[in-house]
Amino acid sequence: MENSNINIYLRNTDEEGTPADPTTPGSTPNAESPEKQKENNGNGGFGAKALAIYLGKQAFQMASARVGQYTRNSVLQDRVSSALRVGAYVGAIAVNPVLGAAAYGIDLVSSSIDYNFKSRQEGSTLAIKNERAGNINRSR
Image (cartoon, rainbow, N blue to C red):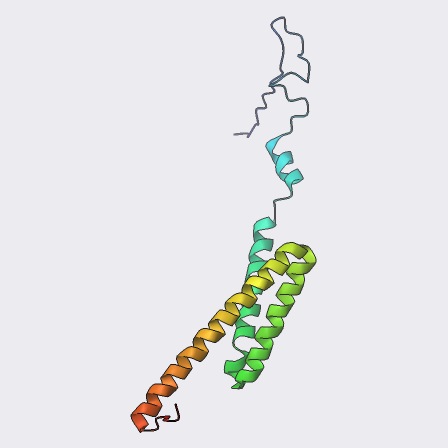
């Protein structure tokens, strides 16, 4: 049995059978086949490219996040994290200066809030430990 394709073409005509003006609503003067539209859209390999980019980013983030774990050097991990953060802000500022500066400001404020919270927490923990040990500061 032979495979045969049946192509049906529709032409926008008026009531008398003459071709309609291409500017009228509903007419498609440059209609393309679905295969040709897919080729022109360029979405053929987009999914594979996006997946490859995503996996590359994940691998880089995992490797950079575990530098301190592999080297047993927390100072090196802090430096790597800081360098990546600075690079991200430089890129963001290069793309859109206003939004990049806003993102940097928000991160700076949240970092200072976290630092103040941790320092207060450590201070109160130290005071409790000193009281338990009997080292009470009586110079007040």
